[in-house]
Length: 176
Image (cartoon, rainbow, N blue to C red; front, side, top):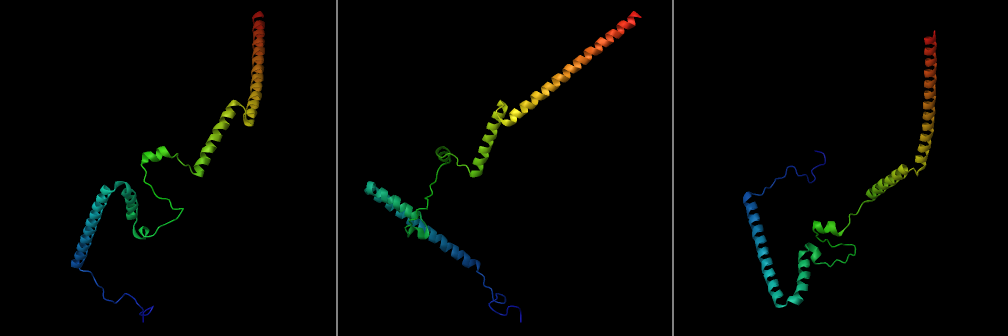
């Protein structure tokens, strides 16, 4: 006996196939049904137009309600929904969306922008010499400048001393 026994397996049963003629017949019936529904909708729309012509002021409000009820599909059209959290979807044009509403940024995007602005403010303060780091850098630069000036002064003195010594050496050489 195979595993699982003979409980409701699909193997060994006769398979039934739908013939092409049956499929064609079903498709024709469906087309006819759709055409019939469209004709009924058109007839209903024509009747609505005639009723609007008779009483334009009172029926225009009702026709909007009927159109919205007709648009709802399935059970939605039958049941009144009173959900305060449900937002009615309105179609907007792209131009309206861009002009009407400012772009809403996510938390990460806002934090990124704030970080960039803070960095720019710090760099401006740093360049102006108002930050602690800038003050320390300027003090270090002042010390380095003094050291370089002293080194240049010593070098100049050494050069003058050498020139003076070489001049004396030449004078002695000439006198001999």
